[in-house]
Image 1 (cartoon, rainbow, N blue to C red):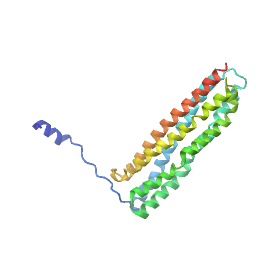
Image 2 (cartoon, rainbow, N blue to C red):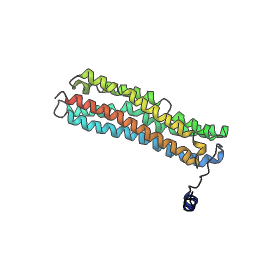
Image 3 (cartoon, one colour):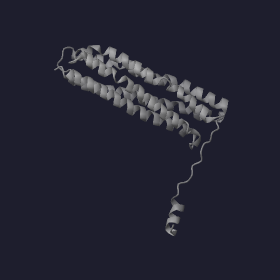
Image 4 (cartoon, rainbow, N blue to C red):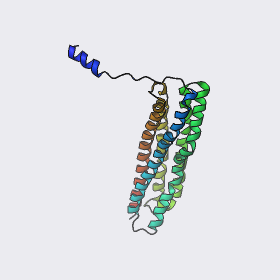
Length: 228
């Protein structure tokens, strides 16, 4: 290696960032409590993405049923149908505080950051099955919309077929959360040890949900349009 290369390496070598380490202590209480709002924000982003995706679908369906008898009622029905699917994601807000309390309790009881972070997984436990169940109820509520499609049975089956995709999106994002939370001791701070995993979780989940919901609503609109 030449002199110039050695000088450059010395000058521009990234500085090592000290890791927070595996220990967890009561001294983290204030910062941990401040993290509750941050974790809650990530859950709210997921819910907002679900609503936004559904609203885009409502616009497409509106164009598809324009001029059909009861078109206003159909659009209202479509909008209301989201409630069962959205509920598990809205419930994240209600569960965040308890999950964080459990995390702090586990962390101080064991003295281990990994124990504190692992407890946070209770926030997303069962989210996938709940979303799939909600999707099935959403489909049931959409019966009047299916009825105006060229093939109601096919439209219903197409909608129901996306339930597993929502569940898979939740499972995939949960795997990301598990992996990222496990990196806690290597993070530079407690803040990063908690916020980075949940940020990666919500990014992965939002992407998966948006894809599934967009595909489902586009198919429904196309089926309604086919019965012109």
